[in-house]
Length: 398
Image (cartoon, rainbow, N blue to C red; front, side, top):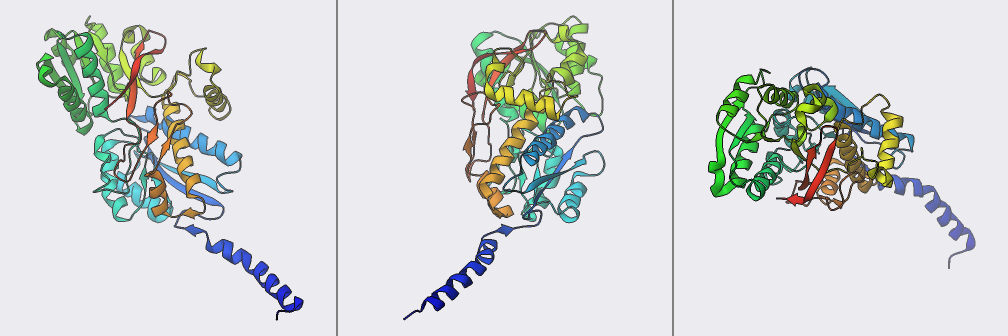
């Protein structure tokens, strides 16, 4: 028969063991602890594509907001972001994993750059999450289960443009400009596949090399082909050059540009806003610039965040919205990990998402599964009116 003294001793022992039991329920891999979550990133802070470093700056600012609010279950997010122009992508991946001891790689920039890192990171079982590239090659969980993209693919963008032409300009003569790399080839293939048996509408296709900037020769070739629709799949500063060159040679087709090139501040203003009027692109996010949209609490929160954490940044730079969305998605993944901050659990949570992000247009969701590593699959078309982008049409998905 237990005496009160024995029962008290048992209770005291259990009380003393509680911290040990609680500690045993926590699981950490390198880069995670009771106080910190270390995240690695590469971004083009220097060089031709430096405008895209705004995405990483936005992500750092979002994590700072999270830290100011107490972090994730008391853990601060420490984003270690390296300049993609400082070394080879593989060397940077080694540095982040082996020297900086990060838990995961997040939103690293570029198709070629992420491909260069992918084999190493998968071999080491390091999550490579929410990449800053929309190449469909990163939706391959069967072969690369530690790598996951984020936004709708380049192929999906091109399919949407082809569908629009078939519906609204079925007798069009289409000229295509694309970078001579994997990104450009995916865009071009998507356009041809989207046109199907009407692929003959493409009367001229020309490519460019990333080593140059002058596109006048390609633009003149497309103009001289008689094309009245321009699938301009040039990316970033090359889109700026193509928009300017087409206008300057007095060629005014119906023009489409990639989502990656739609930033007003980074790419359209340098070309000349009047030269970009009428261009069509695609988006996933709410229009934070319109007075009507600013009545949306989520848009208001984004604008307040921009004012506090990015006071020098332009609201016309879409890259900040892209970074905001990616960072919010990662924070959700880390919250779901709770105290099991292992790399395996990070991937498990990332591969079981079904959520809306605050700045995504209603109906566009982040959805993943162990066999589906393309989180966002929808988009909608937008047209530039010379001042801002305006949406039109329904949400489109492949």
